[in-house]
Image (cartoon, rainbow, N blue to C red; front, side, top):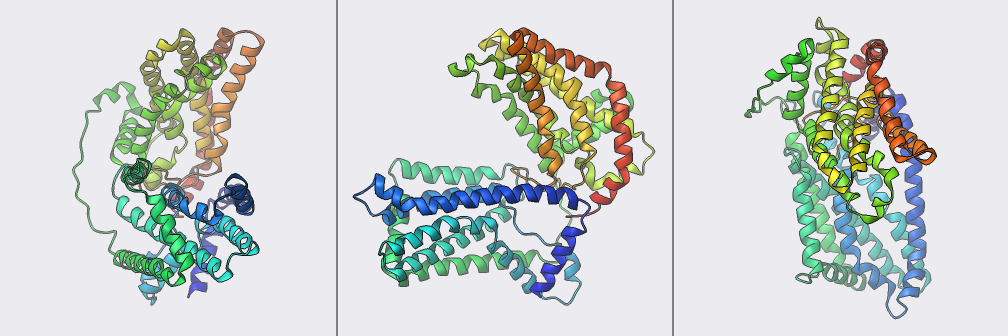
Length: 492
């Protein structure tokens, strides 16, 4: 049965409409994974001699054990943000004579071979081998390594539980951050020394191998709890129950000033406000607005005016970048229905452009108080705003014509990479690097004011040729229309 499940996933991967883009992304991520493996492998080989050099009077193994608390806590937090839990399209399987227990066991077993579980072993195993070479008891070192493997799996299944209970709430990462921060604070102020507790626990297992049964029992308990949790949700009608929730309506009559684009703008505004995934753009907008406070108060950056343009592009264009990079994937759930209506595609795209252009203007106005740090900052933000409206809006909309990945708007917003492909990574080059490069060249050759003027002039040209650019973009979307419909119909 496991062989059959693997065969189904293999076919779904190669038959997906986004196979080409996914393959490119996976190749890049594969090289990055090899880099991480090399780093962890080197860390494991150099850890013992490094600790012996800096702490000649201490046992390297005891030092490592005393720091395992920080690794466990950090691993749990990083997994929540970055680990993609294994998913199967199980509904078609539920109509077949396959026991639900086998499906659940496969999903849980698949999570055990995650890259996040394997990566730490490239550091721990070489360190364990060095310990054996240095004369440490082989059986005790093996038990210590097995304990680490068990702890890695415990963290894996804990992440399953955290993900399950946090999926229904916005800002689901806050409870975990508060919990992890609380433990670190208690440890830092010596109220409860968790690093000593965890260190003594690993020391005890190393000296008394029978104590490995304690983490083993914890692992079994977490596995059974996850098994029960997933099995309860594995029904055909589990997703058919109607959820009743209050919807806060808002007055969007002001959008009528935009004529034929008003219905599309209202649709986008309601979509942003009513869904978990899109609400993240509002929180990121607030974070982006205060991005300048990271740099401008620092005296070191006061002497780096060439950096102001980069910050200005980011501050005034944060909504443009986060919302625009997933056009039209935000509408993927009903894109087929939308395209079957008697509407002009140009109006649909212009509504997106208008919304992003308005966001740039609003963010620039809200960023005016940065003039407190100097008039040069305000000038850079003004030039960056014009560039964003004239150039970056068109660039990001053209890039959207290559989107082929569906987005589930009901999923949690925090660090959700669903719908992200090679397009979203590559488009950052013309959005951020190009304007910073243009400003840098003119600033180096002439002056700061000429650098800002260069950005503003390019932006003005983009605004002047807006109609022609939109026609080109519209043609590109019309050419990709049916490819998008086919791709958005797929769940993977």
